[in-house]
Image (cartoon, rainbow, N blue to C red; front, side, top):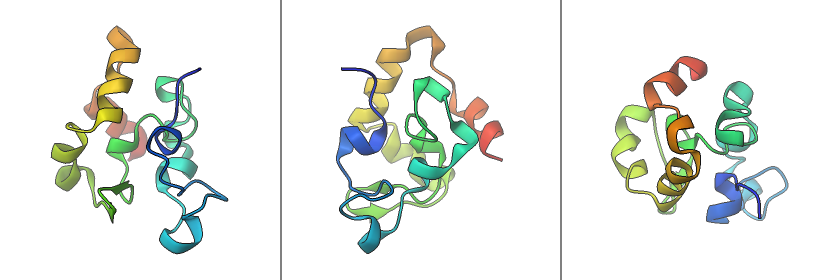
Length: 99
């Protein structure tokens, strides 16, 4: 299997057409193209920790500064970091793409 995007890994259902998209809204990671291709992902699917409005623990998360602590403890974050190795982009670089 290839590298997964966050919505595939977490099975949150917030991708366009997903099971929870109508109820919770489409996740910014699934549609924000500023990070498209980062870590070989689609849109923000492999850089979700720098995007506001992603879902974690059943709650929509806020801006990077308030959510990063939780994101750094996320299994998906660890998977991306391990898969990308030396090519893993630091959050400071990713934030430049987002802003």
